[in-house]
Image (tube, rainbow, N blue to C red):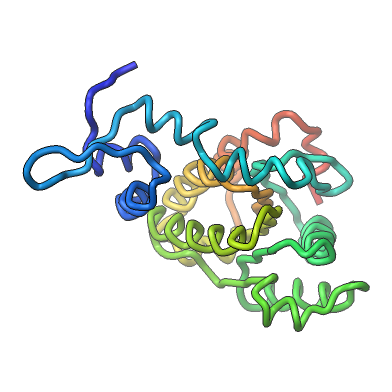
Amino acid sequence: MSDSFLNTREAAAFLRVSEASVRRWSDGGLLQVRRVGRRKERRFTEPDLLKFLGSGSPVSVARTAAVHSEVTVGGVRVPLHSHFASFYDSDAGRLRLAVPFISEGLRAGQTCFLIAAGKVLDAHVAALHAQSGIDFDIALRTGQFVTAAGLGTTVEDALDFWEPAFWRAIANGPTVIRVVGEMASERHGFSSEAEMMRYEVSFNLSAKRFPTVTLCQYDVREFDGRTLYEALKAHPDLYSHHLGCFLS
């Protein structure tokens, strides 16, 4: 393992995040940084970056230690930091996993995100309104339930959307963050499906740093076989569970 110094651009590439995120984490004391030269430029080492990804991350350890370590998705108990893909081929299948997953979180007082647009968003909202034990309007007003049509056009834009959103979600103490992403909606924001899949791979880092459980939903009527294959590869957390649980 190298102990040589990396600059901000190289550290961002190592972590697969934006340079703005690296600067923000180092300025906030979350990521170890050295200042070198008369201009006090930032420098990082690989051991410090790896420590940040693992036990050195205050979010991934200290925060999550005080909350439940598992949640339920489709009747399956899954650990925090999980990042799953689900696949459906009907309008009813779209809601089978997402609505109970979000409803359970809202009842527990957890922050829930839904990335969807148009009729897809409307279908989720209508189904959530029909759930018992939830004051949906209050959840919207207080930010416990957050929706967005898209995340940006690049991987960096998308990751920069999530970082402050996740920090806000944990600002008042340990919690679980639930995320549902309708990928047919998210695809329209990215410049290409390849960029969207690069984001899916990069999101695994955020999933490990924050107390999240994320469900990326793929409408198989909207994507070709190659993209669905790439989606399977981008979600290795699926491999330890029966894939049939995530098919609708």
